[in-house]
Length: 260
Ligand code: CO8
Image 1 (cartoon, rainbow, N blue to C red):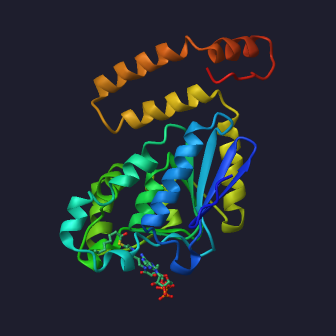
Image 2: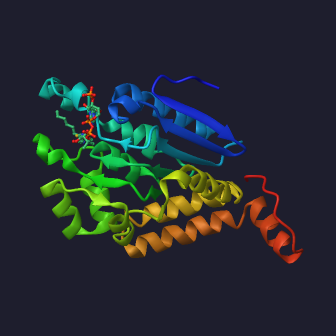
């Protein structure tokens, strides 16, 4: 297994656990973290033995307290444009085709909140706090926050959070639709891994297609999304796992998946 400087990667069965590991900087996201995460997510996506991934943060205090302010503070303005700064999150993390869950264990602020929202869904510890405080630094979200937060919780709350920089606690985040579930901090990773194991036990192509279908709802019209859903469904009915899944149901036994 590859060793990374800024993250820990562990595998258990078909589930990969990735831990952001810069607790002394509240897991702030710098270029090294992005490179490590891109490599780990890329390896996960290519590895047929791995079927779900959980991303969490080291320590009890933070999932990630944002993009690394110290790295960016003195960066010349033109470099942000010339490097298309932050684009790597899209190509290295969002492009992952297999399912993954963010297990948010504390502060998820700025880029940390944006990273959590890149996941297929978020399970939050009761201590989690979400926010987009970039305005206080004279900037704005840059890794998708203005778009994903608005789609997740609606304009009124997204606008209030981005304009005031206020944090949302786990309970409000669940009521607002930002997170799927809130669990006690001490069982967060265990609960996320259990959910990941359930997903990993599903036919893997069907999991990828379900993910693609739901993401399509954010990209297109209802009519086009429904056509796309039908076409993807029609691809799945041709898989060996569909034949196995239906036979297993009729024969009252668990399915054994081939992943094709
Ligand atoms: N970047 C770099 N270092 C950080 C960050 C961060 N985002 N967040 C925390 N740290 C570091 C602190 O500097 C501190 O390091 P040190 O011990 O060396 O001083 C260590 O982590 C612990 O943090 P605190 O002492 O501040 O811990 P507290 O418990 O007092 O406070 C908070 C916790 C409230 C989470 C506080 O750390 C905080 O407000 N952090 C910043 C949150 C934030 O603003 N996040 C958004 C970042 S901006 C972004 O994500 C995208 C745009 C960036 C544009 C930059 C301009 C060019």
